[in-house]
Length: 261
Ligand code: PEP
Image 1 (cartoon, rainbow, N blue to C red):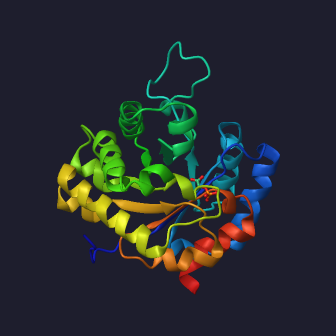
Image 2: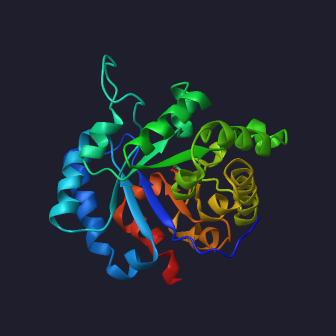
């Protein structure tokens, strides 16, 4: 379901469990130095440091008036209580966090996060006025056995259960084939387009065509400066969720600047 509606791309850097708060400060300052208003005019940019770096990065962005959006990598779905080790969406909202990654495949695979838990987290993030970046994607086995569409459709339907069409329209979905994350193997632009277009069709079924036309769908999985422009040129790809290449300011800035090519 390719569409003509313009959706401002969102390029998000998922730092995963890298960089202490000193390193985070250096990285965000370097990044701010390399990006300009010309970039922010055409592309939204977010960084998702580990929890321990959030306050440092938030203060830097705020004091230097840098329009990079602050993101988190995860949160719990309850606001407070006896949940040792968890971080609440209320705490993130208080730190000016704008976007929260929910259901990253590393959390689904390594920490057993279910579709139901992901759905609760989507609701919790929305309740606090933040934007979920809800990740979906298939394993290599699922892809090889022709089950990509069934897998992502199930994740999209379950993840969006009970979410209003208006909220879906403002959300971000990241299509991240698991076999392409951190492996150096990326989906071809045609493959990534086919699956993001399919996901948009599933969103249309669950939330209506207006929401489907508005929702931003990122591609994630070994996005680098060399492949970013071609991936972003696809009609249903509205940005990228970038892991490894977001840890270096030069590389991440070059991805954000895909529009210059
Ligand atoms: C990710 O962390 O979401 C990701 C896509 O990682 P990488 O870019 O390293 O594949």
